[in-house]
Image 1 (spheres, helix red, strand yellow):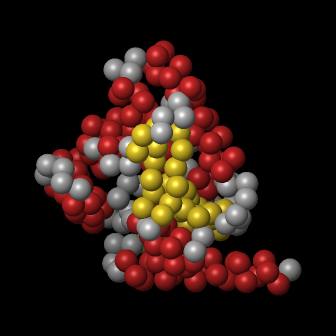
Image 2: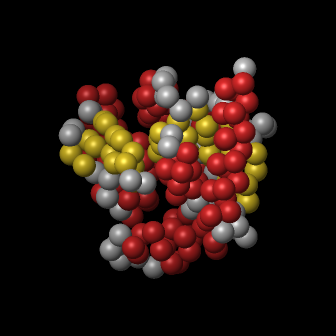
Length: 222
């Protein structure tokens, strides 16, 4: 069973999905982190697309979720912190918009969720990757709120960045994600809209957790 949370950058989907996974004791899949790993491969190849695609196909990408943190590995090396750098953030939309990269990451995710109960967050999971997901959510928040959240996250990791830089980065990513040719960001028709602008973190976690528990209970009865 797969539950998906889609939404724009900084809407709170990743932190919420992690908290829900921990609360319900289910697996967590961070699709955005996987695109960031691919972006890291791209940067390591000096943005040479031919070399990048060859390297990506040969890359050993693995991950696991433990103690509310998604750990990503590239070639056996932990890159969980490195993929959150501003350099990666500034290039991830370009890399993620490439159809070949999306096909690679989507295939990786579909193989992983073949068993167990997963909750995943991303931008097109409910529309392109898992259109038959058991439950879909689409999280939104105003730009100011999203920029402030991401700024605190980046600052907490020790990176030097201004709120205005983060805000501009998110606005640029919004435009790229919504207007890309391959699987643009949009709400699935059957997704539940969750506006977190005025919600506390605990409120959004509780709301989504309760919806998932309803589905699990319903499935157990059949």
